Length: 170
Image (cartoon, rainbow, N blue to C red; front, side):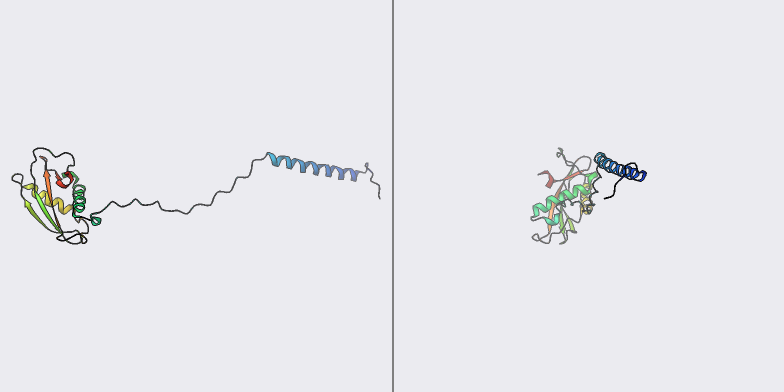
């Protein structure tokens, strides 16, 4: 076995290199414990799912009885004519009370409007009521309701010539 001379300059460099390598290995292990962890990868983006739609409001076409149909049609009258309707208490005395009979086609469009009662005063309220019905139509499918496809609505007019369907006053 050959003898290693510790005073040999090559041997001294070899030992210094090994010592340096050992210290670097130890330092890197120690430094690895001091570094912050690698951040976790971002989660994969979720596919876009549309928000659920709210259930549609019931329409007159879904009515099972004429009473339901009349109530929904009365609400449509108020919604279609917000500037000439009121929903609060009925004033005393009323200005006028016209009564209309609205005859419908199967799809809820107006076939004919007949005046069942003309008011004694403020006769112009009859035309206001007829025009309001036309603005609110069509009222929805009536083909599953019993014939004849018509209903009556009473209009309660206040002094400002605004009306409330009597169906909404019950």
